Image (cartoon, rainbow, N blue to C red):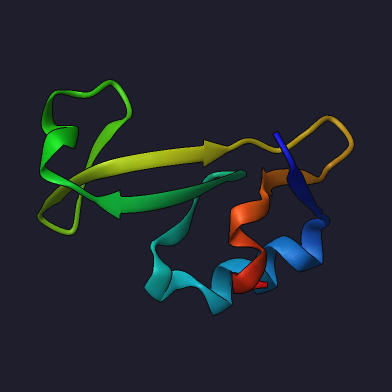
Length: 76
């Protein structure tokens, strides 16, 4: 899967810029929340802001970077 690697400063700037697009922090994990009613019964389902949706999680790597999907390149 193609990916984009973000360092600490890039990751923080990315989250600040894209909060309205559903990105947020969960400790050191970048999370992309996408509202969808089918998420109610899915293991990736999450309840946020009074809505069910899918949460795609991007954990920090051992070198202190995050690998996110390249489909979010337009948000950088």
